[in-house]
Image (cartoon, rainbow, N blue to C red; front, top):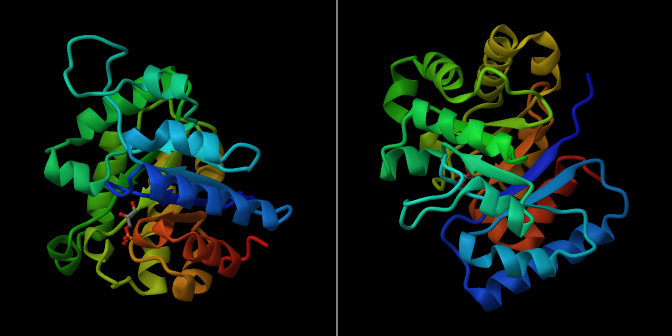
Length: 254
Ligand code: 13P
């Protein structure tokens, strides 16, 4: 089952108008220069840059996404952004349940699931993040934790067309540490099995499972060519167009 790789950048809380626009322009130019890449591209800037980045990406095959949303369509939720607002701005995707949101904002599986349902209803695709902490990995619980997060965070009517999973071991994020390729493949294969039970084999076989956590041009080839790894969710290295595109090239996108 051929799944088109997704190379996704999560800019997190980085970028002001000038440098964010410049980065998006460089990504757009780089992707255009690839001709007909075998992968899809996505960038997820902070809310404040969505409009400017959308403009800078014009004409390039790079999707736009946000990093979170509320589950309500509108209403009295000071400081929050609804899925409809993101759709209205031209977003195609939203990242949900990132470990930084689970940790900083106490987001539970139930909340992530509610947000994902609302995002799908608004016509957004979701990138739902899962991943174990170092203590959980050392206790041999990585697969169990990911299973629980999938079961709790992914809506039961999700399909391969509206949902992408991102496996991001918390201890690998921003640390330069990456699991062994065997460990990555073990979790990805296990996640696909859980997805098959929950959503049916057809969806599970088509659904993309990204790896995230210290992905760089130098490790992209070995990580992104594993059988069940269908792309990357990239933090730090997505803030440099050269590195972001270097990851795509080394992953075999062109
Ligand atoms: P780094 O690539 O900086 O490790 O971040 C990964 C991540 O959290 C992407 O969502």
